[in-house]
Length: 193
Ligand SMILES: Cc1cc2nc3c(=O)[nH]c(=O)nc-3n(C[C@H](O)[C@H](O)[C@H](O)COP(=O)(O)O)c2cc1C
Image 1 (cartoon, helix red, strand yellow):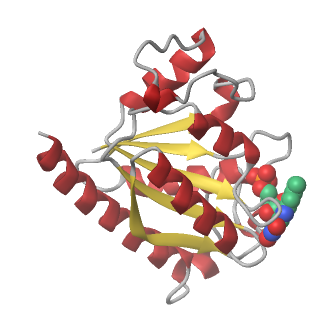
Image 2: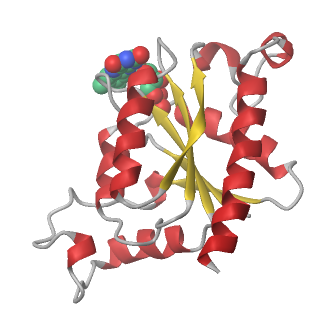
């Protein structure tokens, strides 16, 4: 499984990148998983303004910046979207990036890792609906990281030992979500083949 872990925040001082590193490190430990951390900072996109909806535009000619983003997404079999919760939803920058997608994520599984004061629950709900719009498959499990990332996750993406060991804590949620993502990725890969 070629997995892309996408950092859904681009602001200076962001916390989502640390969480994404935590996810990437654990995903890389799973046999048969090749992980790439994808940072939206490296894919600066204008606010989406194409005249025709991407999935309905057979003659689409995306901008160079959009093409770079779409080509990157095409390389993966599965995705983890690491999202903050901004005003009870996912971030604008992640939603905008997804608005560019036509069929690059079609029939591929998406896991969501969210953070915020209530674990980013409303970001997860909105993001699940959004990924169905780009024809991706949202898996049932998600990680609702309700702890303050700045206090419990290092720059390198290591969570505190106490949290890592906590029964029913975020580490076990992540392990369960990644195992499920692999299962869906294998199943959907066979179906696509
Ligand atoms: C514009 C904005 C809106 C926010 N709205 C929410 C919110 O609705 N719910 C919540 O739990 N946290 C909210 N927060 C707190 C963020 O979840 C927190 O700052 C988090 O670190 C943001 O992710 P980032 O650091 O990767 O950008 C908001 C933060 C910002 C900047």
